[in-house]
Length: 374
Image 1 (cartoon, rainbow, N blue to C red):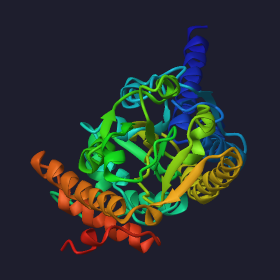
Image 2: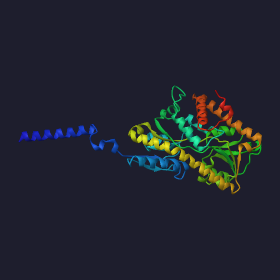
Image 3: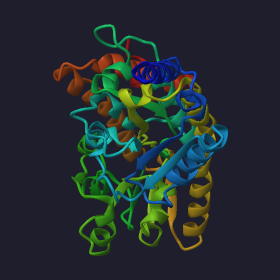
Image 4: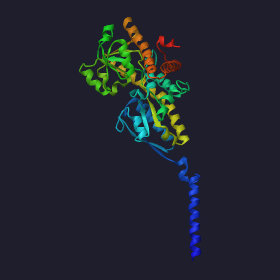
């Protein structure tokens, strides 16, 4: 009887060891990565009707889900419901979220000083040019400092993996009625500035800058506390600004608000390679269509507001003195940005030249003085 018991126990142990060996080698179906499923928690500071959310992130998630045959799904939180704007990096590192959609480096220049380069003023651009330029910047292999590229300096240093997305339409100057007919008009303007770069530009043209959240701007303009703002036209309807803006200076192209889809490197490395490739390809597929959405929105808003009396004036149609003031202000903003980064020990001149060259390569243009930087 004892011998029988010993034999049974021995057979049981052999069976258990064989099963364990099967799991370790990946023979068991449950360990096959092709059947593994993932649900990613996605947070966005954008509203669920924001152009970048509806134009890029929603199609991106739908494409990834479809092309992975449902192995990937997403749990989404919009309008800062789960994570406030500018807190995305902390939330990623804490594991509160898996994907920041988007990461907003412009709101955190201390952590992401080089990303502000996208906010520099251009003499020619578009949502497609801006988006493809920032994509090229993220993928650039040009070494800027200590043998590191833009992406390595800005994002790898923080343990982040980022994918390029569409970014904003170029910024214009809009007011509730104040016209830039003379230099004194520009100098008396009270303008809301959404970024440090716009504060620099505002100082260079002599106008007064006021910093406030976008959602406070409507009330401030209604009360006359602010004359206007630096803003992109296609975003007006998200805040009701089409009711208030009556005068806009166009063709000054005051930068693009850049952002990116972000995960931690640790999270990214846990994703099977085939799903990584699908995510990358889906991002590339949706950049241009999402960028073109801004163009369509802008055309509709311009047509609507013009019919209600709003004016859109090209910088080239302004008083020559005013045009010169604005163009000189654009050039000086580049040089001030370079000096600011250099003082911080960052590669100011290197990132400015790289961005200039990429923008021109993508079909945009920069002020003449910037072209002459060697």
